[in-house]
Length: 65
Image (cartoon, rainbow, N blue to C red; front, side, top):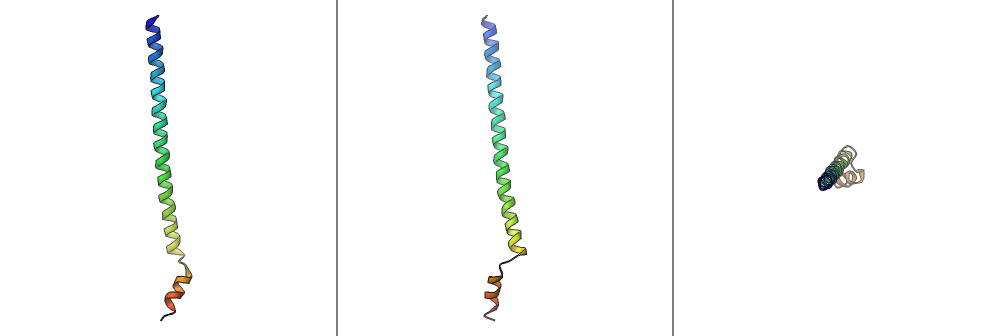
């Protein structure tokens, strides 16, 4: 009877550890995705600023000439 309890305990402990590992891996992947999303958003905003500059700043620079 004691061996069955040990087997069940070992089984439950291994299931709990595997579940914890899966959750940690998912959390790490989610953090990486959010970091990549921030970087891609920043790149998009930079490209938008380059292709479509604010025209008011251009006019202010041209007036003193």
